[in-house]
Length: 409
Image (tube, rainbow, N blue to C red; front, side):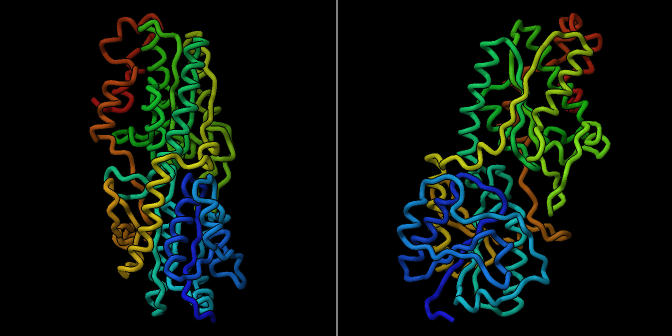
């Protein structure tokens, strides 16, 4: 057993811009105080293994990776069972702190580990840094998860180019963006690109999600723009809608999904944009509207881009925040930094669902001012005032009324 106090850092889930910035900032803060900093490869898969794949992080390594995309520590979605937990690695390396970097699944597992360490009277603190481009961890209102702002900015750059293509070639694009259970990224990109239709799971707060309703929302926007004599546009749909579709609806796509170890459909193995676009094309053909659309998938290309200015500062604050909270004696907590840079801890046990023990995702506040403003004033879709004009394209324009589809009336 080493006499030098140590910390260990691991990353779970998928990449997000700013991971390396957090690793760098955490490492520098603890190296400055004389700690050994151990980077653990492959996340939770190796934490309780007989032998770990690790790297000792020094200042030069930490400094080099600060503004680099991706993750210097190999990642994994592995979720260990409670019976796999053991304290050997912590004790043998004189580890005083476990730093976990990840999203909701990583946070939920960190919460279980924290409880285990407490029950075993192992004096090791555990702090979690909220990472995900989905922005779906339950942080205080208005505070992002790191990686979201950089991914959104990259998505807007790509999305604006797609919109310009639509305008230049007088056609439509159907785009899909990542977001496993929440529509933050889709909403952020869609509103940033002033798209005429944005479809996210949270919109269906008064009715069930179905592929038919999604298609009708897109068609509603296309027909509204026809009335406005605008022959182009982009509709963006969150991949998260798949997670609440019925099994019959999913089967109707003709796609055989595989599922990950958390029983989530492996959406990354298929193009959601292709599925949505194909269904829209079939409906447009059936209606005889003579509109062509093309699919665009916004996915993995957003995850490993270099962090933008927002996340470079934010992730540095979070990384230093780990040291600040550690010195305060915090454990079993998520580190947060508000808009003024103030560091605070959120207890993981206070964020879990009592029935499942999982950290529930934060959804887009569909009734909040931002969402209401965009959905009421920025999008293009059919309303009762359009029925007469829409009759030139649809025999039943009410069926494509945006608010009737969503039962928002």
